Length: 405
Ligand code: AMP
Image (tube, rainbow, N blue to C red):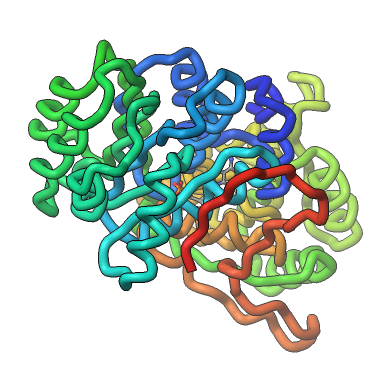
């Protein structure tokens, strides 16, 4: 699903594009319409699923499309740790860059200077506040925090907050908020205590469950950092180095499927392509030949990533990094089925590094990195944290952006 399907405000669309997002992740696809419609939501979603943008995007859109009190906090996002508060505030800044929505992170452990800055922003009514519970409560207790116009409350990583003993602080904060508001609760797990909390805070919530499967332990995973021009020579090298019986190569677009197949056909490999441009009959024929071993290498779009039943695929190559963690798990899950072992190799161009980092976050561990053989020239290093956010030269007309040093 494309972000254009949500009909977001054009200023928000600019922020989405500048952040490099194209398609919505499953959690975004499911959560965003309900938040836009004003519903309370309880969602079980882990870090790495794109859950932050799933609540930030509709919140920003709601805030800019309805009149709101500039002298009050409009949305309060409560999170367990300062790291997460900073991360979400940065995410917020990127996505809201072209809007006039102001935001600030409020967290413990800062110096006196930070406190003064926070006090100023909270007294003036920053539009979106991302906070840790203890620090926010200290500010509220001092009486200057403007909450009269608050419309949205988000509890992120709620299970972790309860594990860290924040229940009482959270309830005290909530008691200081206007009763009429929209509530969103995100949690990686849904134990009883979270359900109890949800019953106390949420009003007829929509429940969303994004369960992420983990890849089979038998799959040997490897990722190569490459420049785009190194991809084709390296695929050829891998396919020719070892005589695999059955290899599935995934590309993200039909164009790259066709281009790569054309290139591979120049070698002596038995290669075919499969994608939605082919008639059903032709697709079935190609699949049959792949299953029978007549075709050794099949180049495919994601059309084949779910549910195809071929047990003996020895190698899956991701010619492009899959869109999200779920797609990655499905693609590489085509190998090492039944009792067989299998390998999965992912090619990561410089602009795809952030996608791989998001997938690794979801898997909870890094994908081992392979060294590109010297004959292909120097390859890029893995530096996914170097932001690719294109900071634009355009003026935004932003009246107030609170930032911490
Ligand atoms: P989160 O689960 O919110 O921690 O997000 C994980 C990572 O995915 C972050 O680095 C986000 O910037 C990135 N991300 C979120 N949504 C998208 C999207 N629709 N397309 C690409 N990357 C995304």
